[in-house]
Image 1: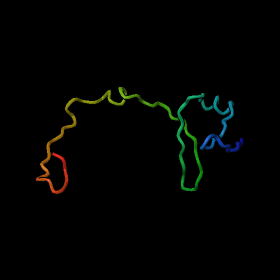
Image 2: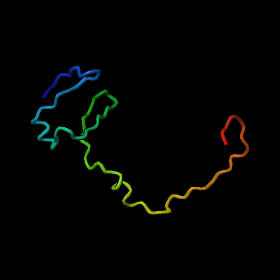
Image 3: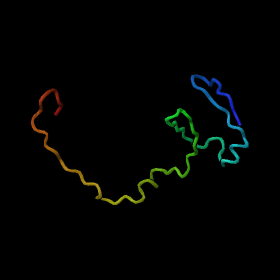
Image 4: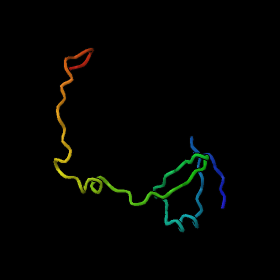
Length: 81
């Protein structure tokens, strides 16, 4: 199946036929990513299992990441203190 790239505002667009969307289990509003390979071919890939911020930090352990203060010495230029 082929499609033609058309102008859409300042961008370009390709219409995805309903049959392809259905087979890929995608719908309007689904997230996809473009992957450009070394040969210049473009792959359109569905973004699945995107996590929200709560899911990303679900395994976070309090105190796991420790910071320490660093003494950079006296100002050498126009630093603000």
